[in-house]
View 1 (cartoon, rainbow, N blue to C red):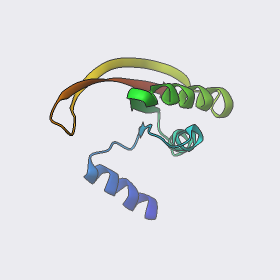
View 2: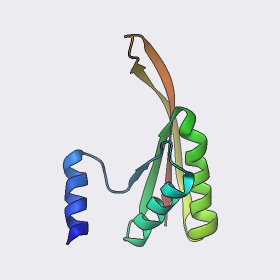
View 3: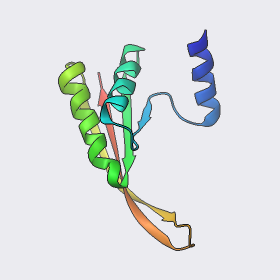
Length: 103
């Protein structure tokens, strides 16, 4: 029941439940999130990152599929850039990556 409440809260916040956003935590934190999504029945999981965390996202995908989920494959890799506004009002471009893992 608590899991359903968490899923409903994610949907309200606009974060799809099969997306893992990679940030500054250790890679294993995100690997756990990916493995949990697949164990909960997800057919695919998207790993998203931008800027300096792109290399950590690649690590998360590789650790997930090589060490924990041997039946998972990389379905798609999408790269792009986003324009963000800095605190001083200037705009800068930041690279982004989205890695889709599928079972």
